[in-house]
Image 1: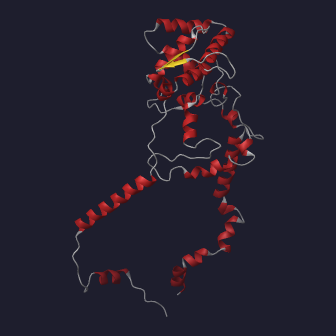
Image 2 (image 1 turned 90 degrees about the horizontal axis):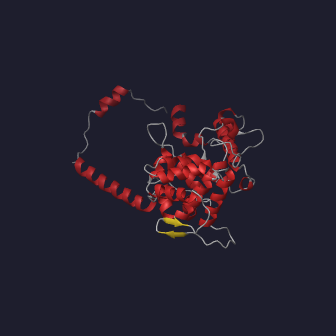
Image 3 (image 1 turned 180 degrees about the vertical axis):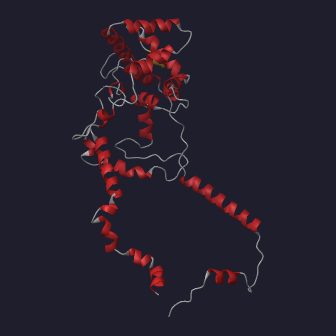
Length: 328
């Protein structure tokens, strides 16, 4: 038996006549109840599921909380021994973190897109921006005029004085408030340069100096992040939040739930062989995820994958009412 089909005109005409009962409806009351209920739910969900509003890490906060670590890092930037100073593309011509696999050499192909000269960008140029310091300018000139061997002697002596190597008999530098005071030694102009840079960082000036660019909006945080990554502040925060590579953690976006849970598929590969022991892990993970994403995009064109819905016709069950109405 076929169902009778009504035209739109017949349905509209039938909707104009209603002989059933009527009840009063208070739209304002309903709106107030809805606002209260939704507000209560939002408050409860915020209390139980929201992400903590952590304060951002800055060079200023790092230099105030860990002044010895800051000057040690700054010294390594000055003598070019830091990780960033020899990172390689896209920052410089170093070879410290250049990854490649088979014929894939992405870093070399794309070249240097964010030029970085660690001694100049992180130390000397910010110090030059400090006005009214003739003694500091003289110290910078002395350092730049010295031979590479003399520069290395000064920076090594200062670094060992601030953070003595294991087994060394050198007493560690004294941290007095926000100042770092190493014991007497041959530091040349480096001691004055580092104390001046520390003061600049603690005032927040170094954060601004490293953000300076030719763009109107200063949103390129590459250099501040590279400097902080060479120090111990970011790794300490990552360890406290279970975000280190061997802890397999993920941080939710502030005020957002569930946040970055989609990253689990990326972080998963770093926990298994051969990714967890390869020096080219980033490139390997990128290659695997790229291949998986490409396979997902090409599903309509893959002979076996595109036929799976035909083998498991769940759509016939889900849309059973639709198919019955059309078959009748």
